[in-house]
Amino acid sequence: MKLRLLLALFGFTCGVLVPAAEPAPVAKQPILVAVHGAWAGGWHFKKIAPLLEEKGWKVYRPSLSGLGEHFNTARPDIGLQTHIDDIVNLILFEDLHDVILLGHSYGGMVITGVADRIPERIARLVYLDASLPVDGESLLSLHKPGGSFDLEKMTKDGFVVPNWVKPGKPFPIDVPHPLKSFTDPIVLQHQAAAAKVPATYILTVEKGGKPEGDDFYAASERARARGWPVLIMEGDHNPQWRQPEALANLLLGIH
Image (cartoon, rainbow, N blue to C red; front, side, top):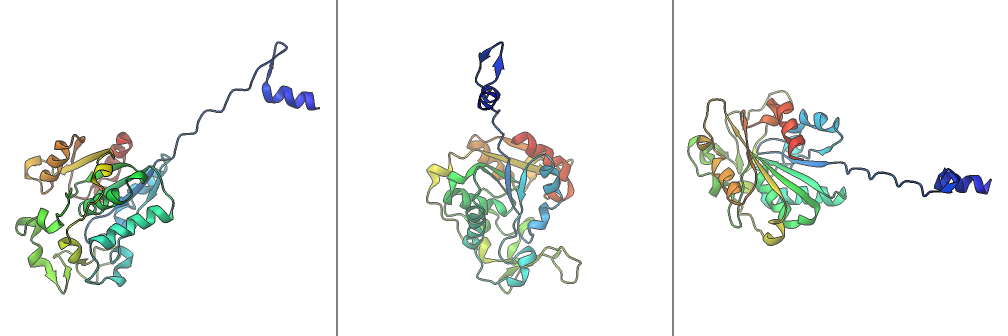
C-alpha cells in the first residue's frame, strides 16, 4: 500500500520514478475598487460590477461618507480627507492587495490621496474622466467657477446642490455634496512612492465633440505629460451608468 502511494505521488513511467508535475500557478483575481464622483454613490457602478465579476473580477463599489445610501449622515464638515480615509480603511479592513483603484470625476481627488497613503496596496490607478490634482490643489482650484462647473451658484448651507439634485425622486438618486470636500486642498506626502504606481487616464468625449473642449481635457494632458496611457472614449461623463458594457471591455483591456 505504501509503495502504491509513493508511485502515485511521483508518477511511474516505464518502471522509472518521475516527480509529479507541479500544478500551474493560479492567476490572481483582479480586484477593482471603484470610487464614484460627486453627488453620487456606489450605486453608480452597479451596472458594470456584474459584467466584470462574470469575467472573474472582484468589484468593490463603496459609497463615500454622506453620499449614496449614507446621505442621511451628511454633514458640512465632511471633507476630502474624510473621503480618502473611507477608501483607505476599506482597503485595509478588507485586507486588499494589488488593487485596481478607479476614480470617476471627483473620485480622482480621492484615489490620488489613497495612492499617496498606501501605494504598496495599489496595482494600478484608473482615472475615469477624473480630476488629477498635485499637492495643494483642490477640486475648486482645478475647476474655476463659471461655465458648466459654477459651484458658487450651486452652494447652499455648506452643500453643493446642482439643479438636477432634487428631493422626491425615486432611489437611487444623486444627493447634495459637502462643499468642504471641494475646497479642501489635497496633501500629498509620499509622492515618490505613489509615482511608481502604474496609471491610465480615460477621457470621455461627447459624440461629435473634441477632446480639447472637455472639462477634463487638462487633466488628461497632465496624465499624458506623466507618460500615462490616455484613452479616448466616446460618450458622456458617466459611461459606468450609460455605457457599462463599453467601459467594462475597456477596463478588461487595460488589465
